[in-house]
Image 1 (cartoon, rainbow, N blue to C red):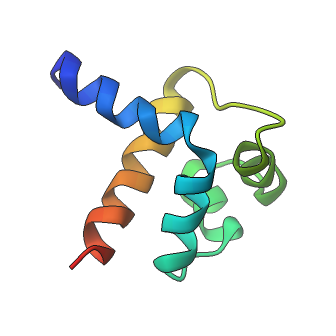
Image 2: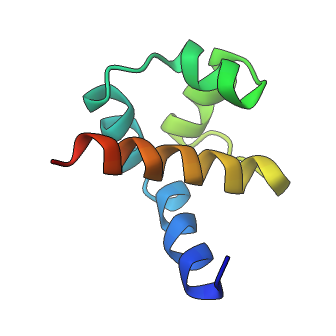
Length: 75
């Protein structure tokens, strides 16, 4: 992945309202996101409310997942 693409994906993490809106627009529950990333639904809730931020490889996986959901629902 290029540096520019990685920076673009990381924007998803910083804009938690965007990530939540994309998830909701896609009709995906927090539990489904959590299952995909092998975390709890409460963890996803904390990411969306800004009380926690995903770290390490989870950060990139979450950003890629939200970005993919956005692309799939932005027709």
